[in-house]
Structures are given as C-alpha cells and as structure tokens.
Length: 220
Image (cartoon, rainbow, N blue to C red; front, side):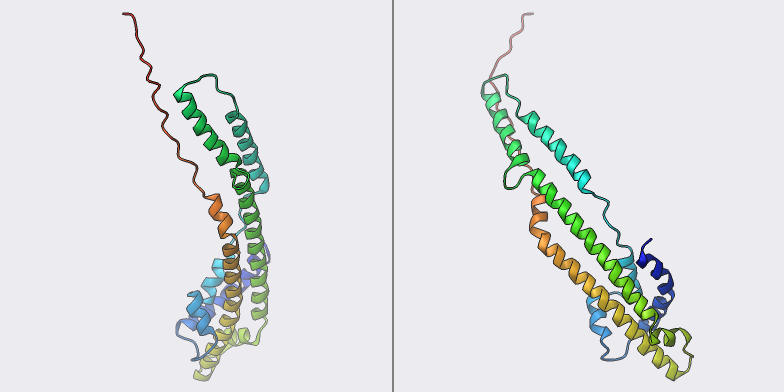
C-alpha cells in the first residue's frame, strides 16, 4: 500500500460528495467544464481509475531468461545439415529466414525484447510518478476550505450554491492533475510507438519444402 492507497481511503467520502454535487451540474463557465468534457469521468470515478493503476510485474530478469532461450534456439539453427537435395536446400533457406528473424543486427527478436523491457521500465516509472502526483493533489484538496464547505455546509439554498462551487473547485483541481497524468501517458506511448511496432513484427512465413520426387519401392 502506497501513499495514494492510504489517502484514497480518506478522500473517498469527499470525492463521493463532489461527484454527487456535480451530477446535478456545475456553475456555468467554471473551469471544470473543459476537464469534464475531455476526461469524461467525474472526479471520483477518474481518481479510482488512477488508483487502479499498478506497476507491471515484468522484469528485465525475465526478459533476460527469454533472451538466453533465444540464444539457444540460434545455436540449434546453426547445426550443419547432414543431407542434401532439394528438400535440404528448402530447409536451409527456411532456417536462414528464422535465423535472421532471431539475430537480425537491426531488428532481431532479442533487441525487440530489450526494447520491450525498457518500455515497461518507463511505463512503471510513469505509473509511480502518477500515483505520487495524484496523492499530493488529494492531500491538498482535503485541507482546503472547499472541503470544509462541502462536508459541513448546511442545506439552505445559499449553502447549496456554495457547496456546488466548492465541489466544482475540488473537482477541477483533481481532474487537472489527472489530465496531466493522462497527457504524460499519451506522450510516453507516442514516443515508444515505433519500438512497440517492432515488438509485434510477425515472424517470416515458412515455405512448404518441395517434394524430393523420390519413389519408394517395397518388395512384397
């Protein structure tokens, strides 16, 4: 349990009040409107989506194990053939395609797995930073005058108006932090899109080896 998990337990009631107040609308022209239209979630719902983010359990060590197995596959492919003929030539061509797929100096499987590991590391760093950022924002709104207004305000029309404004202020602060988190995540994805496309490059299609044309005869 990190800081966001802990503060979310405290902030959950406040954010529920914020969502309930905003469900009836926000003050006209308030800065929360563009954020609501862009994120398409109320502050409490959006917060829960960030709280649900967890680091990916996918380590460089695991990728290293995959790389070792790929090295073993490359060694197996390097074994000399012990037969000749058209079928052997077709097999050799297929084997060379597979070998290039595994150890291509520009785009090998091993290099692509290394890229995937680096992406996961950066993605996990983004998740960790995002959780800290949102935790700090929640701590700020919990100490705000708007939080007091929203929690202890009376039910008179004037107080209801004040509660609506307080909910919009809190919601805008939370959604602004979440907007920054989302845009940062989108930027990370855009930066890594070319490398991720390489990870999904398909393996070469195998070619059916030709028939050797050999006729087998059996004495009955």
